[in-house]
Image 1 (cartoon, one colour):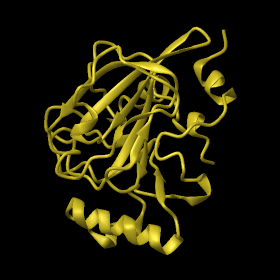
Image 2 (cartoon, one colour; image 1 turned 90 degrees about the horizontal axis):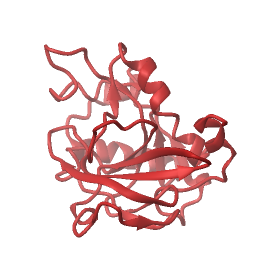
Image 3 (tube, one colour; image 1 turned 180 degrees about the horizontal axis):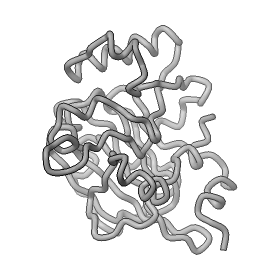
Length: 225
């Protein structure tokens, strides 16, 4: 049986936010520790960071900023979820982020069912989150959609069926989504274990090999570039 990555690569591209926005209107966003412009900008609040992203989108005449898979970032240092004295610092992003305004529709990447959902309320966490379960060519795997609106999980039920590119929910505002500028965290997960409504989206260097294998590049699915 071919590997999941091979199967995903062979499939047609799919979109996970507003299907009316063409990929030609996407711009690559670098949030890595090596981005000197970001370091100089010193955005301290979600509102300031949202303004920073909107400025970049205006400059480039784009509608969506994307990127971040396996990107080492400094933005997690503010939260004990990622940076405490008892565990190795987690600062490597293992999903793909799509930055656009709150209330933008979020779409299911494939036909699937709701595995779980939860409002992860800690500072720097996902906020409302939905995980879908999929089966393609005998592969069972999962997709995670983080930083949603509260309305996205109201009346949702485990086992609910969604079709590819059906509206799953909408993006949340900063006061709901873990205190970030509005964006979607999209992640592919092979083995989800006992996780329910949550799964690490950021890992430490120590665990990078495991998570790189368990969470393939989401752009295999989206095919933005």
